[in-house]
Length: 101
Image (tube, rainbow, N blue to C red):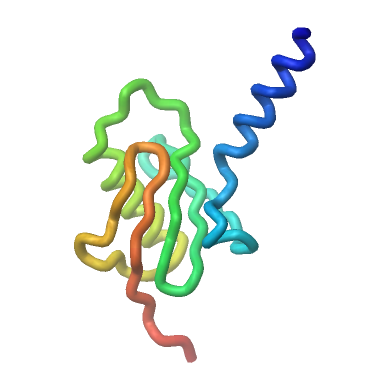
């Protein structure tokens, strides 16, 4: 019974860092910002960010500010104003990337 419980917990935790279907097949990039760890999935002008660091009751404002830094660090793109949505665990946003060479 303990093995089944441990296996179920492992499966649930493994699913927490999987991207939504829209970002399936994109590269997974991990970054730390001011003590918070994020996994960033980037496709075109959209990003999905998962906070994976354990934090006790993190303030939404603080997490959002760190997530913005994570997005801009990983993608090299600027966040589109008022595009960040989500909660302290999973966020989505649109970015403006400079044209490629």
